[in-house]
Amino acid sequence: MAYCNQMSVPKINITLKRGSVWLAGAGPGDPGLLTLHAVNGLHQADIIVYDALVSKEILKLANPSAALEFAGKRGGKPSPKQVDISLRLIHLARKNKRVLRLKGGDPFVFGRGGEEATALYDAGIPFRIIPGITSGIGGLAYAGIPLTHRDTNHAVTLVTGHDAVGGISTIDWASISKSAPVIVIYMAIKHLESIVNSLLSAGRKHDEPMAIVSNASLPNQFVLETSLGSCMQDSQNSRVKAPSIVVIGPVVNFRNMLNWLSEVPKPIGEVETLADFKTKQVG
Ligand code: SAH
Image 1 (cartoon, rainbow, N blue to C red):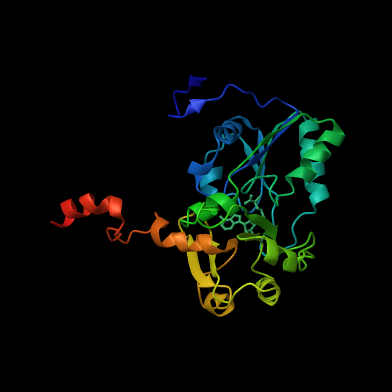
Image 2: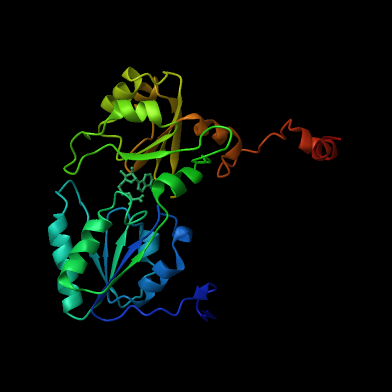
């Protein structure tokens, strides 16, 4: 591994070859959450085909000579069909371009990356997968919510609130309700009421902690801390908006201590091991 002059990050010596595609995750939005492989792809690509969830700050890292091609939903218009995006990637690779396909979060987590990669495979196009930080993990970390904690849960369930065509998901919410101590829901807002009702009628408690994190890791990040029973009311007139990630379960309570992004000074805790520190600070 060598060091590149223009960047203070290690340069990875892997070449994005002509006629091939890198299918990369851009993380939830903060450019600092990009992988070195993704940055390397941004610097090398002739063309970057990006989704709506890829932030402007990230696109600014592209090589200035790269063409930027939007492949997401714009201004209420329907999204381009998945098959057309896959065909476009194949077409560009066959034109001998170095193609970076950049998607929000991780390309293989509710991101249709698997569909695009299999299309490339079928077409005989060489490709590389670059994982990204998924919003359901990294986005929640930016809200001070750990996905697991030994005191609360040994499992976590990631689930989508939509089916493939945007309808209400056919997921067995009653089973999830019984088996998952912590539930992280992507694309939850459209059908939130129905999802919440399914979970409540399957036995989850009204006062179960819940958080909705909008624009996680971006400058306009907003976190609504609520409960399963109050979330519909609380989210109205709040700054909850797309994209939002939902988490339900006891891990939400850790935010009281772990909300590291907050500028509000933290009180010195009553934890025994901090006693000396507290004495020094106060007295
Ligand atoms: N591949 C992506 C998920 C794409 S599905 C990933 O790994 O994160 C789109 C959903 O992801 C959104 O509806 C929302 O639930 C979630 N999401 C993506 N980016 C987000 C962000 N910055 N803040 C909150 N939720 C986000």
